[in-house]
Amino acid sequence: MNTKISPLACVDPRAEIGERVEIGPFCLVGPEVVLGDDCILDSHVTLTARTQIGNGNRFWPNCVIGAEPQDKSYAGSNTRIEIGNGNQFREGVTVNRGADKEDGCTRIGDRNLLMSNAHVAHNCHVYDDTILVNGVLLGGHVHVQDRAIISGNSVVHHFSTIGTLAFVSGGCRVPNDVPPYMLWAGSDDPSVRTINLVGLQRSGMSREAIGRVKLIYRMLYREHKSLETVVEQIQGEFGADYPPEVRTLVEFLEAQKRGRMGRAREPRRDVAKPQAKAA
View 1 (cartoon, rainbow, N blue to C red):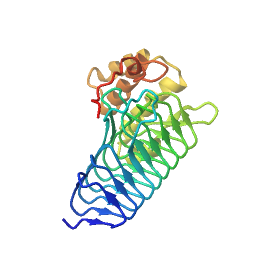
View 2: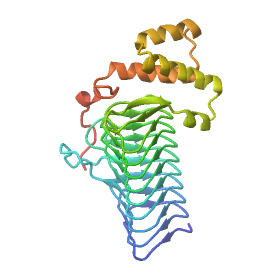
View 3: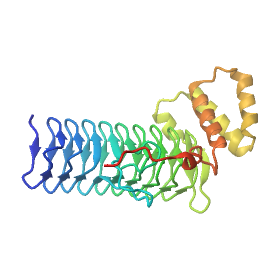
View 4: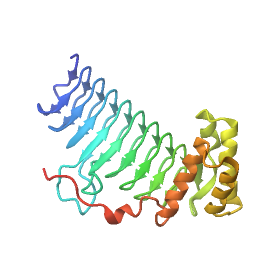
């Protein structure tokens, strides 16, 4: 198997360890952990509870993955974490397992970079190719969609959603959803300030598609037109066959409007029920 486990590590024999794994000194791996191939635990890493981890993940010192949710309603159920492939968890990252709400699971997808001291709370879903910069704090039930970037020391309110290719500037409060492709900034009065032009260009989005995103931004946030008016104008130009970037943005905004307090997922707070079985 070519797996290397330091004699100073504590790995429960019931844990499932893949091939070519390296576990450094003073690491703790619990009995219900599943650790995929080619993972590296540098040192002082804790993996606990029902934590399923894919291949090629690296954990720097002092990461704690799978600790109990910081939720007063949590009553000890055997909730879980699911982590995909190719993620990097830098020093001091913490990821809490799910609370007894929604499906009882915290999820992290593929190829994400979580920088030092970032925190992912219970029932969050971090999609693919995101970056959480140093000190980012995600409240419970936050969703961070593909290729979004949240800059250092930003704080995201629970049940908020950060849209695809959105960018949150450093030190921001994020009390509600950030639509796809937008740049969120401001310390005293944070809001959408412009489109995430650099991010869209780096993603390979065409000039025409960026122009359509910019047009929707201008109508909504500069001309202050209603979403209904914007949708009518889009339908007049494209009919029902929206370009994909337009559809992504419009569907996100419509869901946000159906939600509460600027958060599409906020109503789930009222219907979330325990579903995890007791340990």
